[in-house]
Image (tube, rainbow, N blue to C red; front, side, top):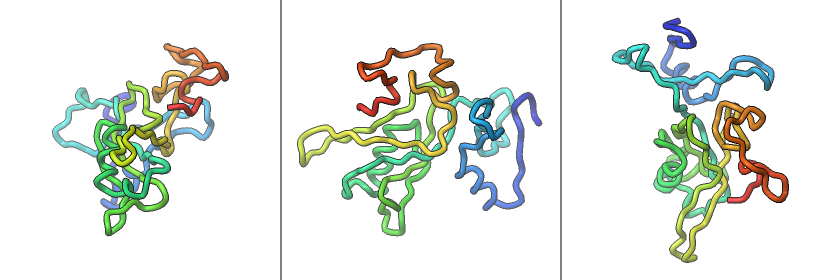
Length: 175
């Protein structure tokens, strides 16, 4: 323990460390209520405890139902770059094509900004902007009202109004 809520963990092997870092989000507690998210960062010898900042985290995202021509590493970095602050990697095979039916990427997101529900790309062939849904893997507490990770819509400091169907902005499914 370095200070309150700041710990350093050592791993026996680089493989174990990679598995833990690539597998986050991690939680403490089994109940939905009271669960705490654990934000992980790779160790930096030059960082002072007072400089450690946990306002962002790495998370896996899936971009759904993309045209096959956009399911490669190049487009993965392009589209995932619109979702997060930085793209860490795109899940591709040896031919640099997406693995599975959706494009999957590991990105850094801000914990102080709303998460994106959709990502857009202009289709030169169809001459229009097209929108694709985003699914976050193992996302911690998430507010369906304001879109920020870390609280629920019940505790939202900036609650949104519901639409004509009674849905909050991050539930309605509209772009």
